[in-house]
Amino acid sequence: QAQLVESGGGLVQAGGSLRLSCAASGRTFSSYAMGWFRQAPGKEREFVAAISQSGGSSYYGDVVKGRFTISRVNAKNTVYLQMNSLKPEDTAVYYCAASTGSGTSMRYGSYDYWGQGTQVTVSS
Image 1 (cartoon, rainbow, N blue to C red):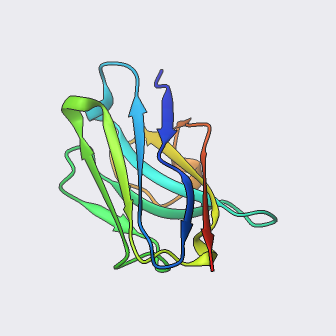
Image 2: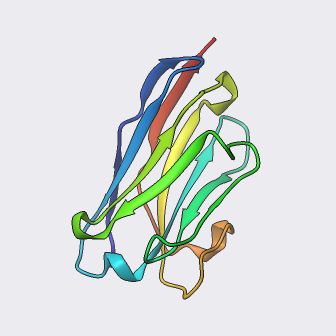
């Protein structure tokens, strides 16, 4: 069973950048596809980005495409989300998730393990 811990959230002005990290426990990190989701108050959890087990493939939600970059370092059991050109509408709790499935999914239900979330607030 994987345990995921996010870090790197905080308050930033519009146009700024943040890098989120998600550290995973266990020795099977390289077997998980990883994803980032976010949830704003009163809204459903939304897909942000996902990356394959090797890091060779990545996918993005339309609202973050071109601004956010997902990456991973399997030797460090860590996945990252680099967020640039942040907008107030990016304000949300950001969650890291791990999937034991063979593919890389944008579906919330495909992920088996979740972190506790980290707050990102973008001021205008």
